Amino acid sequence: MFNYRYALVAAVFALFVGFTPTPAPAADEVAPPAADETLIYLMRERRFAGGGAKMWIAVNDQTVARVKNKGHAIIRAKAGRITLNLATTGIVSGTIALDDRPGETVYLKWRLGDQVIREVDEAEGLKFLRKSKRTKPIDEIRPNNEELASLINLSRMGFDLMQPAGDVIEPNQDSAVITFFRRGDGKDFAFGVWGESEFIGTLAVHEGLSVRVPPGEHYFLAGNIGKTLLKADVEAGKRYYAWLDLGTWVGRVRLTPVARSESKNLEKWLDEVTWVDLAPDSITPRILERADMVTEFIGTAAERAAAGEADFHLLGSEHAY
Image (cartoon, rainbow, N blue to C red; front, top):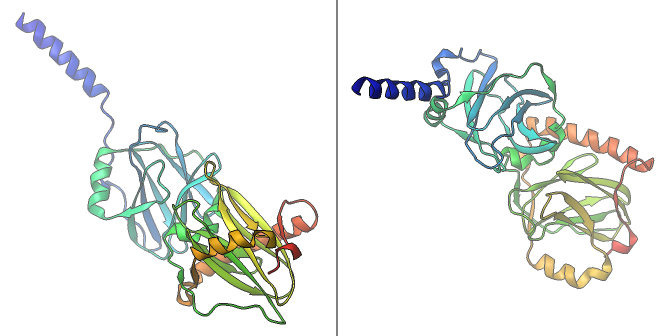
């Protein structure tokens, strides 16, 4: 009887061992980053709901890896401007900037449902690595189809770009003013507002900003899941309003012009708004590199809109105040 029990216990133990995940390689088994590299560990925390879906990892314009639930990926990137984003089915699930960190090792954590990727210290990173398994590398490098969607919302990467606004911008005989604002829709992060030649700023809930423009046609863009294009045809001496609407269920954004007929509602909405503008010191060369990529796209989108090949919302004379 004793021998039978011993054999049964041994068999159960062997079966358990057979299903134990292969431990992750120790960090000291991975070659350190070269002087011109940034070594990145992207760690995905466990989540039961949706845990079976693999997540694509992209660096700048290339998709370089995937990561499973409770797994990690190891990425070597050329140091410099690094925009890392996670995506699945065309949706950006998180993004972070890791600019100018040559020779450094970076530990990142993310969980399905989070809006941001979080950087952790080495001790926390190594603790997770000991319990996780490296996701198999992808067979080939692919284009990053979500790069632009990552760049549109710079605050989501960790950039703090805004400050309390100074003097109120007023229209004059040579210019119009367009004011963009958000109401109480969504609270996850601030959305970017872009003009055809410049980055205008980011808007969190109940924030607003204004931009002075010459009379005539101008295009503006915002985005999250998909993009929204606004064509503004404005007159000097007039003020115009558009609110950035975030869809409750899908998470799409829309730049919606406010007509004069909505003036009573507009007064109530603006009573809740805090005014902001760009902090001049926040616009670094790395921000400008990203901004050039977005405004180049807006120029292309404006050309397609003028040719009748792209949809847009129109802000015109009925929206003048």
